[in-house]
Length: 341
Length: 112
Image 1 (cartoon, one colour):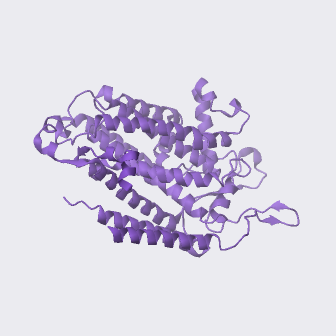
Image 2 (cartoon, one colour):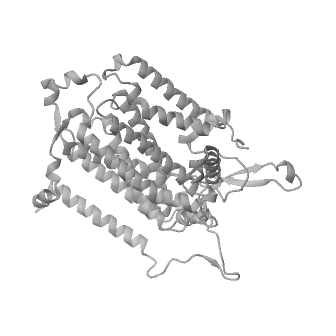
């Protein structure tokens, strides 16, 4: 009976061979991120039933979720901690992809879609922060409005005057509808290209060794990879649940207009540090990073994937990474203050 | 393999039973927003579980005569277990996930 369903559902078509190293943790980070996103989506579906995106009620509706709804605090905690885990796994995934040269031909489009997915995750975190509608959320929105005003024509679409619907309501629609649709489309594109081009070879093996009989024999069934992902996914869910049981996510009171007293969530602290130095970094820094990531496969056109043959690229990447970590640490220790005029 | 399936089904039924019992113990009561009967205004839910860090903002130049504003910014807080509705169920759910993870790790362990 079950076998018949497996055939009808096409589950048997998952029995194909993939490289053995696919089951190593660095190569499962994308899959762990995907599972965390499923957890995020499911908890988000529940939260939408109780959240009210009206300015007068948004903050109170979160208090309602966490204090009055049965297990509402748990669902909200799962949603919050899943985001923290995703930020870590997606960053590690990016580092792994760079280190193993997985952005190089023929995987450029996998890389492009990955960069866009990363941007959308940033969008999810930003809009989610605003939706809390506490002081942190309010200030995040003010920063968004400032940036959109400065960038001109395109930015006008995202300003308050564009529509009579308030920004909170519009960002809620972006958070629960526009971003998820874009995300799913890009994710399909991303997964399709992983399927087409396969998982990238090990950097110490290289393209030449990939044709050697030893590596060809070192293959596993794809279902084994799925099982591995489920195991890691369950562990991730366990970790998220434990964090939820122990630490409640922060939530401030209703915002006070016209002041800046909070810092952004930790994943945006690098930008916050740059903003402290030069406020226009809010526009310039993300643009430079996004452009650099998109252009990477065109700039680094060497076909070598071996680490010792890519010293310059790796040194530049590590310097950028350490700078980012340094800026985040600086953001943690800096006192919050006014930035925008 | 059969024992594993039986254990799994037992766990699912058990957890569902505990959860349903806890979730619907109020029998027929509907969710109502707490209201203040004298004025019929909605009472704000009390935030008993998160300590909020109050930040006092100095008055800006043109409002020196006013009192400084106090803003409640959020901060992380260790959960006060007894004050969370359904905390025991959340713990059981987490335990259930741990068991499933343990079983999956055991039965799908790398045999190479």
